[in-house]
Image (cartoon, rainbow, N blue to C red):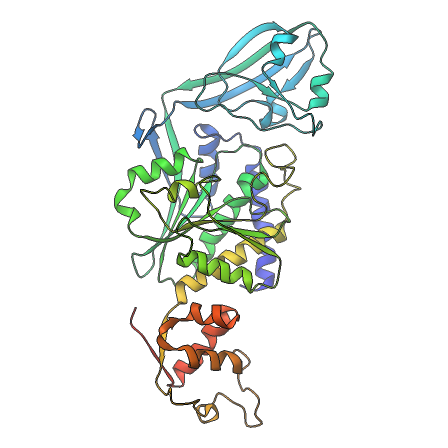
Amino acid sequence: MYLTDLEDAGRGMHSLAAELYPLCRSITGAGARSTLQRLSEDIPLEIHEVRSGTQVFDWIIPQEWNIREAWIKDPKGHTVVNFTNHNLHIVGYSMPVRCIIPLAELKTRLFSLPEQPDLIPYRTSYYNKTWGFCLPHRDLERLEEGEYEVCIDATHSDGSLTYGECYIPGTTDDEVLISCHICHPSLANDNLAGIAVGVALARQLACRARRLTYRFLFIPGAIGSITWLALHPTVIARIKHGLVLTCAGDAGPVTYKKSRIGNAFIDRAMGHVLKTCGAEYRIEEFEPYGYDERQYCSPGINLPVGCLMRSPHGTFPEYHTSADNLEFIKPHCLADTLSKALAAFDILEHNTKYVNIKPMCEPKLGNYGLYGGGGGQRNCHFDELALLWVLNLSDGGNDLLAIAERSGMPFCKIQCAAAALDQAGLLRREPS
């Protein structure tokens, strides 16, 4: 993918995030459906509904939650908090309520951030029947004593959990799983950035020749991955690699969290891409906390699924606040995350093993058209050192990624050199 394409892709991803930002998403309900319907305009997305009350491992699909309005009026009748102004004003999954209560009692239902007094926090209560509002701490401090009118027009009813699945077949049944959570309302980095990168990845991969099959999941966090895993036991065995995409658009360096396996091929591929990218990066070891990788990597399932992000959750002050807005994510950062995921998938697609069929000292490469007459290289797409590394380590035991790792050269250079040597008749590809 060329830089101009990445620039266009970055703008497109940011534009998609801007369209989705106003929707009030949760683990169930109309906001999630509207989000998936919009994604289906860009990629072939099959939308699934799983009924409330369905048992999925140790969990049960909860009742569906939908909200129409929510507000608080002060003793003078002025609206001091209004859900229509920002989705984060309501505690997610709040129960319906209509009452008049004194300020002291109301304050037990209000959440703010004293250390970030101008921001609205993000709070949810998926599995506890309660209600509440979130507001900037400065606004909370300005509330006067008296009786406050409270309205939350919401419903909890038997319905379903909704998720989307995009299936892009390859020439083999071996699958790559890409998972994005869709359940956070109006959080640009910790929700929409991962979705936008996931959609862009699906569009890019659909246009390429593919050996592997790609399965994209757009699901509510935790309960969504648990549900999908519980309902697809026969598919799990086909998943050979996987990524969870999240926090993919901020200006921090790209971070990769390894799978539970720790040295799975996706761990090696992502690690190599980051180590040879020429920019700052972070690689984290697995821990059973974070996003849906902890479900895919649970001990009874143990899929090779890592997590690709930029700034990890909880490490940036905008996390789970109204400051995680569209200004916080940058088109060029979205594009950079996309390019690194594509580079890792290129490794998954093209990694193979070769055998040097003339291993007794170096072959005279000039005889094979690999050197120019003046000692320089005739083809700018590979270099001498890459040729020598591939020849030296192609003994049937090392795959191209192993050669790239040992040489410290980008996989694309090693792959290009191997292709040239193969075409010159100096290598034999080993069967998969």
